[in-house]
Amino acid sequence: MTQVGDATAGRLAMYSRHRFKLGLFGSNCSSGLAATKVPERWSGSWSDNLKLARMIDDAGVEFLLPVGRWKGYGGATNSEGETFETVTWATGLLSATRHITVFGTVHAPLIHPVYAAKMFVTADHASEGRFGLNVVCGWNQDEFDMFGAQQREHDDRYAYGAEWLSIINRLWTEDEPFDVDGTYFHLKHIEALPKPYGGTRPLIMNAGASPAGKAFAIAHADDLFTRLYSLEDAVENVRAIKAQAVAAGRTISVFTAVNIVCRPTTREADEYYHYYAGEMADWEAVANRTGTQRVHGFRSAEYEAYSADSLRQAAGYGSYPVVGDPDKVAGELAKISALGFAGVAAGLVNYLDEFPLIRNEVLPRLERLGLREAA
Image (cartoon, rainbow, N blue to C red; front, side, top):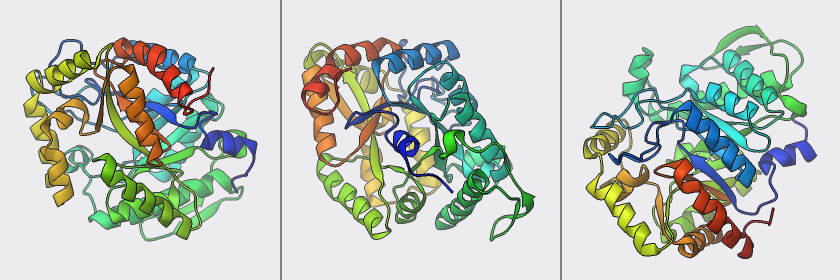
């Protein structure tokens, strides 16, 4: 079974000594997380992804997290219409970097577990143990239609995901061939070699908002990715997640998504935020995205309030806005850390253009606040 030791600890910490982890979210997609028509929006090209991965690797940022997307949201920009398959994307970037963890975001119902286990191990060996798996149990039937697949009822999706992941874990850890006679899979004499790199398994992340989703993440993941509606609401959400994990005999790290707009002055940052997410928003793409989510299962009073914030939806897929000068951005991230979050995955309008200011001005401030250590 999975060993507990320095290698496992290194994976869990994303090979980083920093108290508050930082990652970038959505760079495998055209437009990233933003539904905007500004000409400088993210290209999502391979050359730009490669430059970005090397830049943040050198800066000490912990991870890249892709969006698992198979078709765009239309509108003038067809937001997220051009995307890279995430495990192949991760393998290429891992082979070109030295330190960062790169996740693959994988829809469990669309990939057979025997194939998946082998695919993930290939990425893991290519990076000497820096591949991470972000498990997605599915929500978008429009995309599933492309595969001729029908989604299960909401809670049943997570039961399927649990069986899928248990098979992969057995393939990663058991030496002898075995049979599976489960609810969803009936498999004969399955086996997989090689095992994950270094005798430990890849880091597992899952995004959970519903009770079933959170329960799945707490039972099976190392990191739970949850929405941050407001700083006030997050206090109880994070506390409850960690309490559930303790009750289940597990420890879990909680992450969230943010949308960062950092400029030399807060006035410049505010003006740009309202420019790209208001004046230049691709409202048709926003409407298509939120409408698709609502139709396919995002039905709650909380979601309705969240989706109604049009600026947040256009700016960064509804992620929490961190907008200001370097002092304000660092201060907002410090508040998020104080809520109990282990780290954030950030969207930027143009990752390559905007990250250098974060590297040069925000990261040193986070060091002075005790959230990150000096290089």
